[in-house]
Length: 76
Image (cartoon, rainbow, N blue to C red; front, side, top):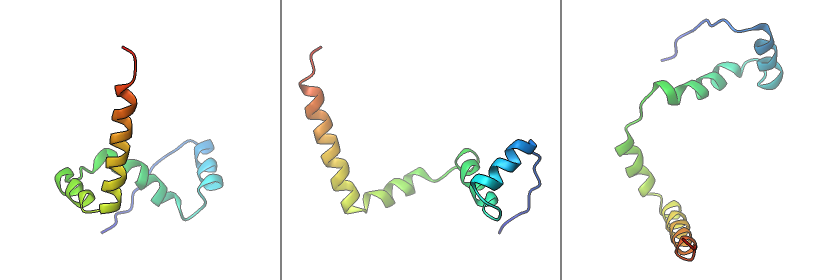
């Protein structure tokens, strides 16, 4: 369910939002910026869901192995 929220911003910010984001899209833009700061995700569920993505897991494993090889040859 959506709720209406009235906020006050500087006129320059308001004009910039309309010019950059476009009218009718500002609410979605603001929600996308604010959501990670105020809505806590269930991390266990999110990690479980990510682990089921086989392509993503293979890419992550490749990246981890390459990173490990790179750091193994660094001088200390």
